Image 1: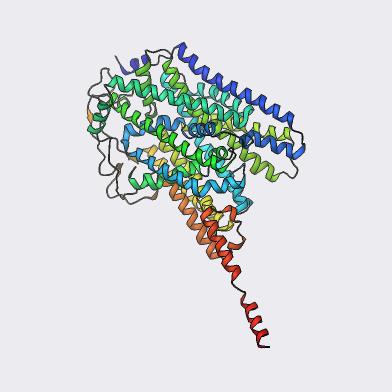
Image 2: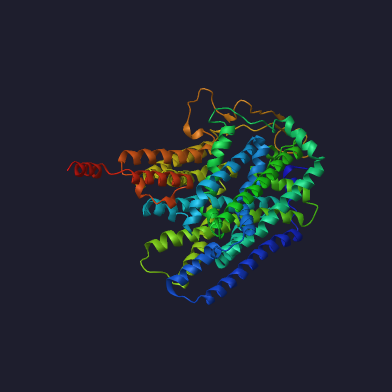
Length: 601
């Protein structure tokens, strides 16, 4: 059998699978309708009018009236964080480059401590809807607009990839063109996000998280049984060095080292969790800081469990195709179709089960998309419309703005899928592109809560400087990947055991990458943009902080006594307050001299 015929035979998506998939979409739509009706009932009960009514409507739509429960918020956080990019990208990463990437889980725990002690206490006390309102309170309106624009840019770079990834899985399972299924599914997501607000998004996320875990558990259990048990998976991974000890190399250009995974990983998780409107909006929908802190650790536990499942699945894919690499034979036409291929190979004979997996992948994408759309409506309403409008919005005007934003951005994201199709593997692509906007943002927020000396001029210059540098780095790095000037060496693979024909001869590919995994000339000069992509966000944040701090100190316009201590993280707040107290106890020199003169008289 030729590879083309085999690929066609694996696309056995029956009516039972379509039924499961459509049922998932229908449940999401029904949840949206339910919470739309609930929002209308709440609106009728409002006894006040004008701005208070509009504010209450916005709070209910955007943060669930700040009365959400820990369980659904935790599930929503997990679902929003674990997009289809993680679902398909992480197993692909482990399959191609080994399990070194999985050490990034340690940095997720470190991020939890940073979030717990440094960021969340500040944001929760301020009772915000838009995270970027903090920037206006800490600096000025220009920084607030800068932060909001960066969030929109980050969303434009990230969410089209989120939409594209499940379409890859659907294409592998059914053969249906990705540009046919993408608009259909996104219409459902736009519908329930638009009419139901945060509560609809959160409760659909609960359903979608359950589907995600269920789908991955099915793949893991059935695939492991078929291959002969976990021992076989482990043995084949060890034979090809896919199981590795931490790499302590100091080479910044290596794809993964202990330092890039820990230091770069913390910055990567922080920009996705601590300063992201998508995530902070959920923490702020909880009534107390204690609830929000509990949600952090339950969220981290869920994400760690999911990452371990995804990492093991990558090893399982290799164990299954150890003697016949589907990328080399073109059975899988893209890197990120490896997991869908395993699913169709494993579950193709079981009607309905491929539908569960595809529903799980789309659930991951829909949760991230709905979260992003809901957050964009919050940012546009709070940071642009209310900021520049002199008169208060009525409830009807507020509702129109929020829902219009969801629809307009939803259409834009679907259109941008055409551009994403031409770019590389989704996991690295997402982290690289998102660092353009999120690196400067992380730096501005971190300087705001940690460094009271940084003023608005320093923060703005630091943000713009970092934005320019990060844009150059990301464009240059992506250009080299697309043109083939930058190639990451794969772990060993083989096509010696294929039972079907394909273009080329069966052979072994022993591309071990122990001495650095970037393919480049030994005499080539060091180029900054070729550092590990995990350093990008960290580098952008540090550039912002250094430029902002140096500029603020040189201008000598910083006023520590004028900084609102509520805007600082608790331990910095205590230091500033103690300093002010000590200064208040020291008598003024002029007053002291006057007292001495009176004594002499």
